[in-house]
Image: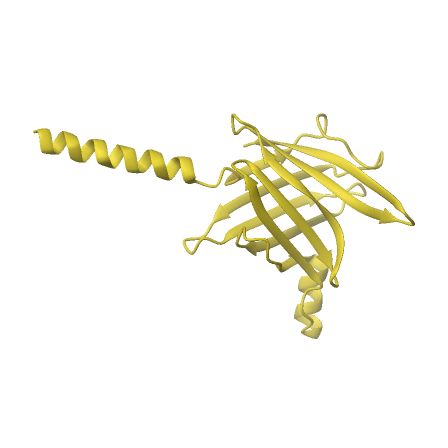
Length: 166
């Protein structure tokens, strides 16, 4: 009986340790426009993000949105959270790949810098177009993405997007 109890305790401890090491971003998130700050008065009408981890440790991120003009779109990446750049895709990149065989001009990198904090960078044709941080709240119910855009004509902008876990 004692061996059975000890085995159960070991299994519970292992499951707890695995849960504590799980990537806190995993799951589905919905943009909360009321809590978000946008760089312009016209902003994304709707956005859902989903993050999942593959069995090989790669993180798959997918964002589906409707922009300010009512057009749907998406962004997708598969990365290791190691700071290296990986291909990122959207509708235009997929179209060029399908029609012309062109590789995507988009690249994404991220790296955990804290238990619930990720530094990330987006590039287009090798040039940084945005960077920032993603932070998951202590209770795991909100996701905050702080975006730093270098801006056009020397007008950089910083804004925060807030997502609620679904």
